[in-house]
Amino acid sequence: MKKITLLLVGMMASGMASAVQLEASGPVTVLNCTLLNEDVAINLTTGVNAGVSCSTQTIAMAACHTAGRVTSRSAMIDSAGADCGPAPATACTGTLVSTPVEGAAMPTATTAAGTVISQYPGTGVCDAVKAETNATAAVTAADA
Image (tube, rainbow, N blue to C red):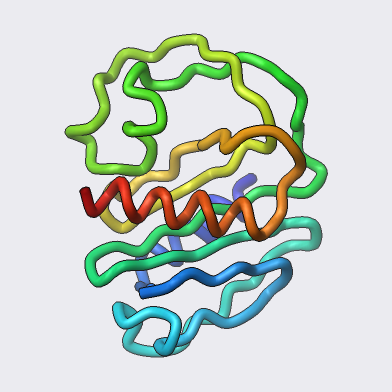
């Protein structure tokens, strides 16, 4: 988990106008993201999938592990729900509510929020497509 957090923080310190799916270590290039001033190599541990997305204002990255828990369970989620996510702090109410969740936990970070927040994008195992979709949703929420 520490490696995923460090990876997300590293991405926030650098910069991304389209989305990139990463099933293994790979590049995010200036052609993929106009916010970058140089190509960035993302190094993922075995079993970690990630997605990176950016707009002209925001970069987001989401990651998950293929061996992560996917069963139904409860997690403490901000009562603003998905809108709170990695969007600016003004979107969060600060009230944590025990909420039923399913699917892989997906730590997600944006340059707009400056924090890493676990998202639960639904049923099923972790894959790069879900990670990229979650990162794109985070960019959309942050830019709203």
